[in-house]
Length: 134
Image (cartoon, rainbow, N blue to C red; front, top):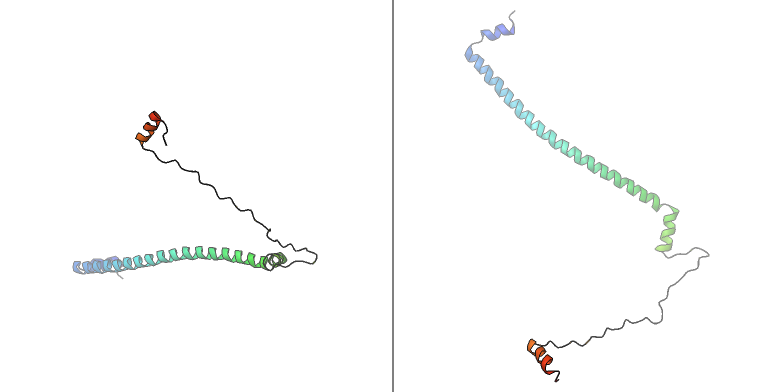
């Protein structure tokens, strides 16, 4: 029985080169497959993170909606709706209707102060030296 090492020694150099080329080709194809699998894995990891985030948000929304449902089914919500939206009253309540007053105070219109006429510089000096002749 020959061992594997003896069998390799019996192979000629040309055949050894051929085996090396075949082994390298197989290795290259395996690396290409590994690369594509890594790309797919990274995409799936990203999708997993997005879905986990979306799941968390949906769970929070579910909790909030369930709390709103519990409140909507409570007597307090019914009472609040009846009094505020439907304008209903209980027995013994005295309804108060607000009626606007008879006369409203009007806001006075501000009076405009007369503006002084803009004077040229020479007119100011004339008035200073000769007085007001107008």
